[in-house]
Image 1 (cartoon, one colour):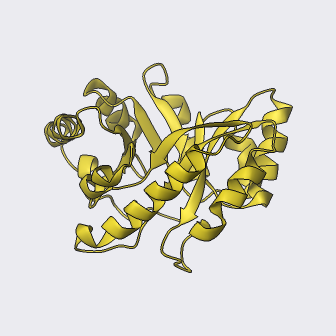
Image 2 (cartoon, helix red, strand yellow; image 1 turned 120 degrees about the vertical axis):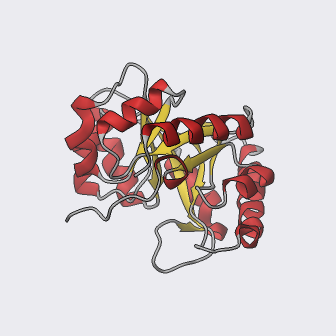
Length: 227
């Protein structure tokens, strides 16, 4: 894990590089609350958690007056009820079963949950997300849930040591993002393309991503979480 000085330097650099073209989301898996709150001191306003249990353990210690919390990891339906009132967006909606549970829990609390449809851009069996060819129909089905507000798309491309190799995937999802944007679907406040992480965010932004999820690029290598 990086020192505070390194965290500050990374955030300043990233905000300068992005220069308003994309929103910076600090991916805070395994990062302790005191360092997450320090990131807020350095200009971070948006964080993303990957695991429901970890989010719940940290929640009370987070500076929620300054930090907007998104859920960015794979979400089990039975965990939705625990986080539905603790996050302002869920990035990883990839099934109608999950969407139905979000609808149920949001309705119970009288809220509308902003969501992103997760796209499995490279068809990797190890990852969640709907196939690119099916995403338009999936978004239309999501929009039928009255307590969901469909805001855009999210993807995680293949891991690679050469970020340029993922340009093709970022271009494909951007084109799909534009195609869906141009269709007038009810209950769709379209505008967010969440793509790009620490190793490839610059490529993602060059292809049209407007929200990037940066973890190790801010906080350094994280320890393997204890299960």
